[in-house]
Length: 345
Image 1 (cartoon, rainbow, N blue to C red):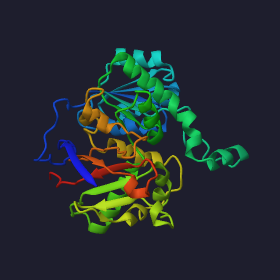
Image 2 (cartoon, rainbow, N blue to C red; image 1 turned 135 degrees about the horizontal axis):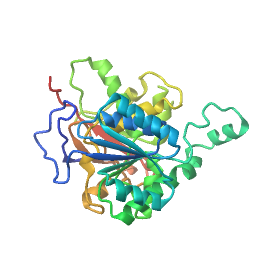
Image 3 (spheres, rainbow, N blue to C red; image 1 turned 45 degrees about the vertical axis):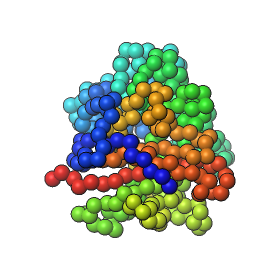
Image 4 (cartoon, helix red, strand yellow; image 1 turned 180 degrees about the horizontal axis):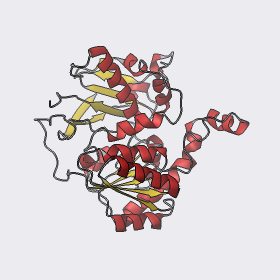
């Protein structure tokens, strides 16, 4: 396993900045964030970003209007961050181009889909059971259209800021990369697993202990057993967890949190993972096509795939060869890592 450090974050959430690395020239406080998708996930992202230092305005766009107005109304009711909602069909590239031209956002967070992943979770009819048994891939036609329209608009308007994709990023980012439309980064999934591990460590080590460096290698299919606290019988099917610089294996930590059945409650963990670091999106504000941006784009088709996640104080770029994990199978995995630093009291 080889590890390279790209840059550090600031102490925006009470975490002291790294003394080893400095912010790149393009890093800056986020002024305006465009969130696409006024569903449950979008509302949670809005609520989290509203309490993020450096965010001064939130723009929520999409349909339906009632859900969007509710989400914006809650931000206005709980914070003094400026927030507004724009009705827009974000499957229409021209509509997204207008949003970018008129709104001039610094960051885009794309979390819209044609159907919620949880839309059928409480249904027991034959159609719902058939779709559920088919696995996640069958949902791709619901997840790809909006993010493709968004990224096409990004390219057409030469938008230079980062784009975070929450719509099945393990797959959609790889597809879009082949089209020259890769988002800057995918969020969720492995970062959810990372938070569960850190939560288990906090229980184990106590409230005053400094958590070690945590690195996680995971896959979107592993979110469900992690959230249900059900470790697979075959150790090879489990999330890989590495602690400290030496990488001590501690895979069991991913499966000892409080169990949650699959459902919309998972969005709460996803939102926490996405808004945990206030400068998460600032750190990836690189020019489109730059070497730094290319490291961040998730390349599912390559044998050495990686997805990097900024931690509260350290931004790491971990490249893990899937050949070393699964023989010669080219199965994409994603990685995330964090290092804690003492909080400022």
